[in-house]
Every structure is written in structure tokens, then in C-alpha cells.
Length: 494
Image 1: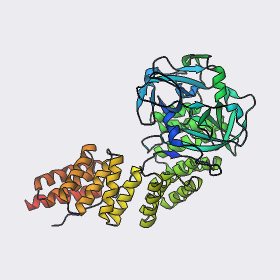
Image 2: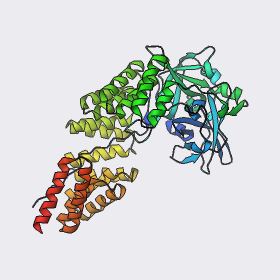
Image 3: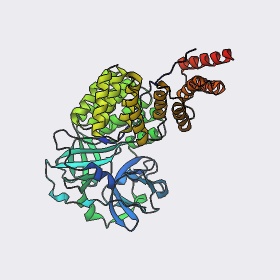
């Protein structure tokens, strides 16, 4: 009797570090790794970014936007205890109670956290010297996108297009291209890695969407005029209410609020289309999501993230050719964006274009050797499609070294050992996948295959029984029937 040994057809796709660049500007003029070290993510009901501007002993001060730390539902902050600061190395710290202070008259706020780790403080530059046409660099964290585990670290280049006369809330600096939701509060840097502003808004004139930032000089001139944020009144705009509904999983309610915003807040079209598209995607209304991100592309044609997300949605909708076209656009904007190559490689793989997939994974790894995703996906093609098992093992080993909690990597490394008839390492890898994810049906099934080949019939039966239960619960009828056939074969043999 022969039982099929299978390499999983599941190809993982993740949002790692995102790098957004304007291709007309020098994209490597600043070291993004250095900027990551003093840029933080601020987590509360929503999320935003901030920059470390001061350290006294083990107490750090972070500068961000006022609207990042205010709850739109309550017109005030949440308790400081509900806020966290996440550093570049994924350490999370609670904000010190009562340290969230607003800079009066402008959309800026400060907060503090305590850490014994050594984080650098950004150097402050001279925003008064900025002139039209200067390159500026923005580093922050985009909002989590439905389907991705985290928001992405975003570093990109923009061009200063001018200064606003009589700016509202301090937003004097205008630049192109605009950013995306979640990057509010992120530092704006000059070519010497000096802080010259805080990013916080975008506004559209119907054809073009500009980004807006507050010069650091505004903070320096007003830093002694601070007050508790709870004293600040915040308008309950449709976008903020929609974001709150989306965070609760009420996507249809969120869409209703974004629809209102389209009529009442046309200057915020970029945010509206992005957020509504994300909500449509969460509801699996892929056509509507693609249409909204197409509007995003129209308004911000130099923003690679619009093409990247639209490509991701198209791939989820099995339009792999369309996804490749969008990833091509993202790569044209930023030839060094490794994740675009990884995702394009996955699309090529789904179309059966194995060599193009390998080429893209190779390119992604050459740009970012520490991409667990690229190593994983290349290993998948090498093992599943090309039967180059030793090369596949090397990639899965590296993927696991970089991301030891990814069950799929252990599953497919087990599949390679299975194909090489190295039964014990195969069992060990399937068992590790099950340890990480006890409901991993394929891992139970494949371990059952190896146990059968080892004549461990009772263990094999238990694995197939567990796999059949999981496949049935997951609605995987084809594999549910396969598991039942294996159970029948074992029971009949006994």
C-alpha cells in the first residue's frame, strides 16, 4: 500500500519592513536602520508613530502627534496605562501614567516610558533652513492591514513642495508623495539624519494628495507650553469614527462612516480610499477593495504602497497576472523593495512560472538576506516543484533560524525529510509544527504518513483521526476524504 507524501501547497506571505521611496529622489541618502532605532510605534486603541527626543537616566521622552494619543470616541485620552511604546527590537513598554502632554495650539504631544535598554535619541536639526525641492525622509509604522499580522515599518523619500501660510495646527511643511494611515507622528529627517519635523496629515485637491508636517522649530518654540491632553477637545470626524468601528471588526459600519467622509471631508480622500479599501478587503469584497486602491493609485501615483496592497488583494482574489503587474509598478518605484520581489515570486509560482519565482526570491534575498519569508518561499519551490531537496533544506533551516515560531516552515522541512526518507527528522519537524499550532491539520496528516511508513500503526491512526477532525472543521472536504481513506486502510489492515 502506498500513501502519498505531499509538500504543502501553502505559500506564506507576510508585511515586513516596508520601504516607500520616490524614484526621482536619492533613495539611499539616509540610513534607515539608524532611523529605526529612535522611531517607535505607539499602541492604544489605534496606532501611530513617534520619535525619541530625550533621555534622562532610564526615562525616555517621545514626540508624536496629539491626535495619535486621543480617543475620538471619548474626546480625550485613554488612561496612560492603556498606551504602549514599541521599539525597533519589538520591546514593549507601558507609558508612564500622567506623562501624556499636549503642546498647546499645535498637533503635537509628548509622552514618556522607562527602559533599561539603550535607545538612541534623535539629533534635532534646523527646520528654518528647509527650502522648496529639498529631499526629506520619513520613517514610521503604517497601520496594520487586514491579512497582515502587523503594520509595516515605512521609510521613504519625499520632496518638500512648499510652506503653508497661516498653517492650521502647525502644519506648515508640504511634501510629495503623501504617506498612509498609521504614519502620523513619525519623524521627518534631513539628509544628515537630523529631526526637522513631525509627519501628521495628508490633504487632496482632487488630483493630487500632499503630505503635511509640523516643523520641529514649532515644537522648540512651544515646548514649555504644555497641558494634559484630556483638556484638548477633538472633533468626532467620520474617518476617526470609521477607524474605531473597523478596530472593533464592524467593517460595514466603518464603510458607512467612510462613505459620509467622502461627502463631507473631500480633502481626506487618500485616507478614506485606503481605509475603506481595507474594510472591503476584510469583508472579502475584493472588487470594491481593488477599486478603492485604484483611486489611491490615481491620487498618489508615486506611492508604492498603493500598488503593493492592490497587488496583494488581486493575488488573494486569484488574479495573479494582475498582482504581478502591480508588483512591477511597486518595484519600478523602489527597485530595492524586497517584499515586492517575494510576493511577485509567489504570484509567478502560482502561475507555474517556477524559474521567474526563483529569480524573484533570489533578488529578495540579495536585498534582504534576513527575510525569513523569501527563504521559506524559495525553499518551498525548490522542494515541492524542483525536488532539489538539499537546497530546500538549507532555505527552510534559514527561515526557521530567522523565524523559529513559523509552523509552516517546520511542516515543509518535515516534508523534505520525508521525501528523503529520513523518517525521524520528518517526525520531529511535524511534531514541532503541531507544538506551535495544535490545529495544524496537514502536520497531523503528514506525521501520520511517516508513522505508517515506520509501522507505528496506532500512532498513524491517531494522527489521521485528528487530521480528519481538523480538515472537517476547516471545511477542507478533499483532504477530509483523504484522511478518512487512510483511516479505513489502516483499520482494514488490522
